[in-house]
Length: 245
Image 1: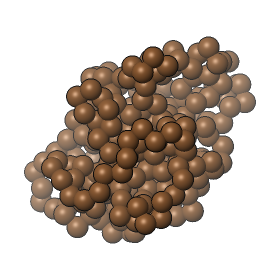
Image 2: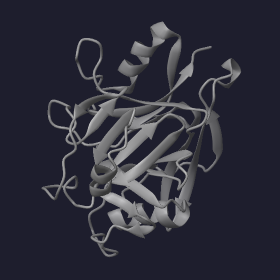
Image 3: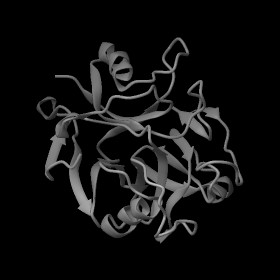
């Protein structure tokens, strides 16, 4: 559904917490929800398992786990592909703990449509890094999620994307600025091709690197623009944590 374009601040501004900027934006006949995270201000984390080792699965479950700490989600999105048991397909790091190793090379499905990449988060910094480059750099990430394919690679679209593709899904992903100061999360409001989705990150947002998270099951929690998407239980979740009022 196409929503009216506007800029919203969500989170709990009254509490003094940093706010994620979110808006609706159109490009080349498609509509997208765009949420920008300021890495110098916002508390961006990833979530997979609760204290009992059970996958959270839903945004509401993460919110319930945060509540005893006086915190809540200001924004959240599914953050990478997962197996039937909701374990991550690729590299996954949470709060410095490596839960899944890096998976190199080509493989089946969208994940294996190389080059794929890793979304790496450190204090005050986030970057989408192509997987082979990531293996060479070996950066220490506080949080990380490997997914694929890359959407934008050093300012160029993934070479396998076709302008005349007929494969259309609701898709979501993340791009980062060259200096790592902002992470930009996007979900399409309508079904789009990989070429259209990657072109949005490259041409409309001007981001040098971007990574595909998933399609079909893609979901967004963004109360400031009225989004709390229902759906199947998720694997990795990325979100900004803010203080409750």
